[in-house]
Image 1 (cartoon, rainbow, N blue to C red):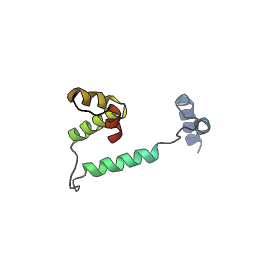
Image 2 (cartoon, helix red, strand yellow; image 1 turned 180 degrees about the vertical axis):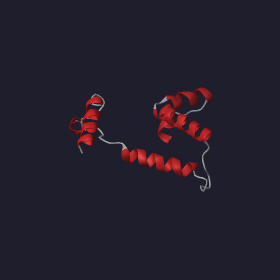
Image 3 (cartoon, rainbow, N blue to C red; image 1 turned 90 degrees about the vertical axis):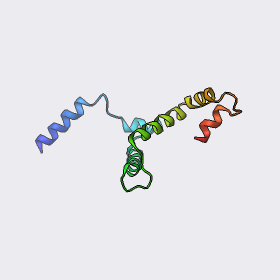
Image 4 (spheres, rainbow, N blue to C red; image 1 turned 120 degrees about the vertical axis):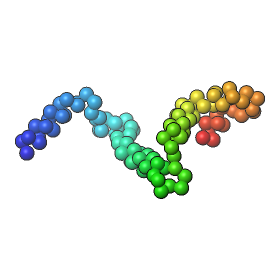
Length: 99
């Protein structure tokens, strides 16, 4: 018991700068845990990479999908799309909303 408490104390001291203050985050309306979201992502990825899935992802395909999703969320995809198709009458915001 003494050894476990000593290890806990050492870990707490060494990680105090990166530890979250849950009370402060709660009062600021910030998220306190990401476990639910992470477990959902892991479940989807595990299922899509599974051999029993009818349509499965390849590692290269998943990488392209993630890059496209990030560009959509940060607003860069609309500008890229308009560069490819300058004559299309489509607003950049419409592309982001559709994604």
